[in-house]
Length: 85
Image (cartoon, rainbow, N blue to C red; front, side, top):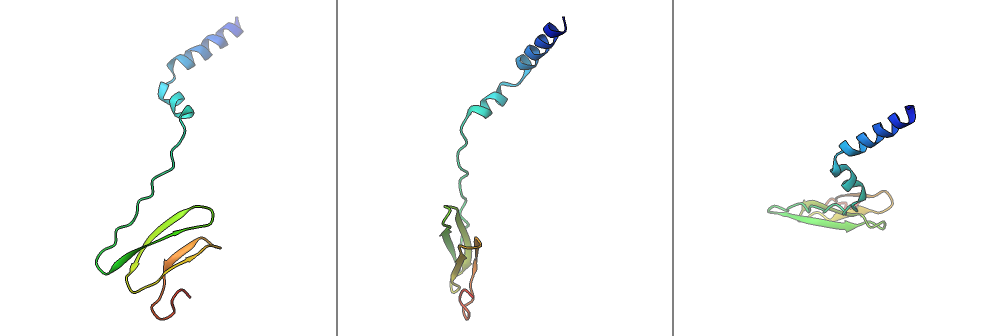
């Protein structure tokens, strides 16, 4: 008696479960699209891809160099005097 009740309860749970939950588990995930920043007047878009394949994009002033450090996965705008130090 208890076993048939448990089976009926499990069948009811599956029957009332939303179908979207099952569809989400079986569909493969697409990689997230990277949104590139927009450069305004006097700016430029810097792009770098790290060795693990992770792309990065950021905006710097047009006179500043684009700096990236692969070892610590860090990017920034450099200085016109000190460059990427």
